[in-house]
Structures are given as C-alpha cells and as structure tokens.
Amino acid sequence: MGILGGLPKVFDENLLIGYDSSDDAAVYKLSDDMAVVMTLDFFTPVVEDPYTFGKIAAANALSDIYAMGGEVKAALNIVAFPEKDMDMHILGEILRGGAEKVHEAGGILSGGHSINDISPKYGLSVMGTVHPERILPNNGCKIGDKIILTKPIGVGIILTAYRLGAAKPESYDEAVKNMEKLNKYPADMMKKYPVNACTDVTGFGLLGHLGEMVPKGMSAVIQASDIPIIKGAYELAEEFYITGSAQKNANFMKKRVNTENVSFALKEVLYDPQTSGGLLISLPQKEAMHLVAELKSSGVDAHEIGEIMPYTGFDIEVK
Image 1 (cartoon, rainbow, N blue to C red):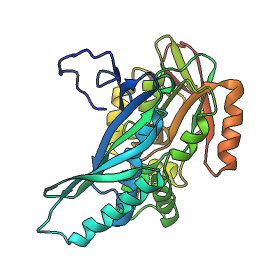
Image 2 (image 1 turned 120 degrees about the horizontal axis):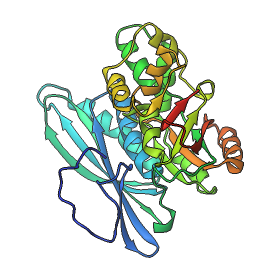
Image 3 (image 1 turned 120 degrees about the vertical axis):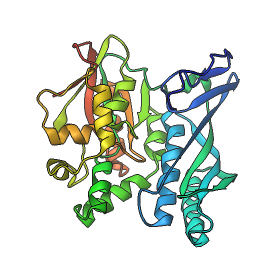
C-alpha cells in the first residue's frame, strides 16, 4: 500500500485496516456484518500485446481484494495514454482486456478516469466487501502454520530476459498465463478453511511479502526445493538475467533473512518482483494438506513451501 509514514494519523474506529499497516488493501467497516475493501494499482505495460496487458493489470489490481478475504463488487479504470502519439485502438484493447477480468471476477466496471501522458499506464481502483470478522490480515500467522503458495515465481526474470531475446517462448508463455490468472479461485477455496493470514506476491518478491506476514517472535522456515518456479527462470538467473528491483528487495530484507546455503540464482528468484503473483496462505498444519489437494484438483498450481516456527534468529530461514 505504499510508504505513507509522513501522513498525519487520524483515528476512525471504523477504519479497520489503513495506510499505517503494510496490508494489501484498506478496509472500512460499514456495519456489524459488512465492511468495504478498497485498493488501486496501475503500471506501465509488462507485455507488448495491449489486450494481454489489460488482463494482467486488472488481475493484479483485483488480487488485493482476494488477499484480504473479500469479494470483488465494482471497479474503475485508471488510464494514462499518449493520445497524440499512439493509436486509440491500442487503448481500446487494453480496456477490453481489463473489462474481461473484472467480469470474470464477478464485479462490474463502473467507469474511470483518463489523462494524457507520455507513456501508457493502466490499472484499476477496486471495491469489494468482506465480513468484518472474516478479514484476512497479512500478519496473522501462528506457530505451527503451514505456508501455501498458489503460483510459481520468476515472472520478473522471464520478462526481462524475453525483452533481451534470451527467454524461451514456452517460459514467456507460462509467465503470461500465470499473470493473467485471477486469484479468485484459490481465494474462494480458502474461505472453507481456518486461514490465519494471507497476502499476494507482487513487487517485493516472495521473501519481501513473506516478511510482511511473519509476526514478531516467529520465523518462517522455507524449503527451497518446494518452491514452484517458472520453467527457465532459475537458469536465466544463473546467466545474470536479473532485475534491479530484486536487488533492492534483497538489500531491504538482508538483515531479516538467512539464505546462507542458497545459490545466487535461487536468491534472485526469491527476491524477484512478481506481477499478478499468487497468494501466500498461512493456516494450521492439519488443514493445509487438504487445501493444497483441493487447489491442485481444481487446476491451481499450489505448493506447501514452509511453516511458521518460534523465532530462530531470523524472520525468514531458507533451507
């Protein structure tokens, strides 16, 4: 939700989650059984095809509602576009892709706002609803919880390498396919289970977002061999097709994470910024295997990647 520490603190008892936390969206209580979830996200194109870009940007913005345990209700387009320098048909295709994802999410696209800019940017402001007692914070993990990841990682590396002509088409296609997928489906399934915490994996990478989930006095112990990685991403990282954002993520987290026995390439994948990444779900051990099995049976590429333990000396240990 951004770094907004300089803003004045204004108390409202109905603002259940606001900008002073590192959660995925704001939550405002309307009644004892209804709260509204609010989020927005937009960015420059990550792929060349405008229709595909629209789908990815929308899926990314919608994801924050799912990470909070909410249901998508309505969305507004956020558009910046160089009206004089680019064909307006391109903008139409971007909006078409975004509208399709909002419809798939069960929401209604209700309008939006556009400005003339030097480069195209697109995203959504999204409104959803959740019961105040069923909000899923990102830092509610409990000792003994298992951690589930619902999409493979490595998107940033694949996209960077593809632009340089190094990534194989099948790796790029897999990355795009995963970015287009809504997190609606794993989010719907996890509502049947006693989930303690949830977030989605985006710009801070797997370890950055996992670090937001771990409460004080606890550690997340991750098994490197269990982490799903897009085919080709590890090999590309070995060849130094890496991103500056991953390095920033690593520098920010380095004092909190033990990756002593992890290869250079795997570290890059673990810190790699994701676009429209999967959900990280923390829930009791005996329930986790059932959720993973149900997710896999429905076609979600879900994996149990670690567990929450008493503090080990680091917030995250990668084994």
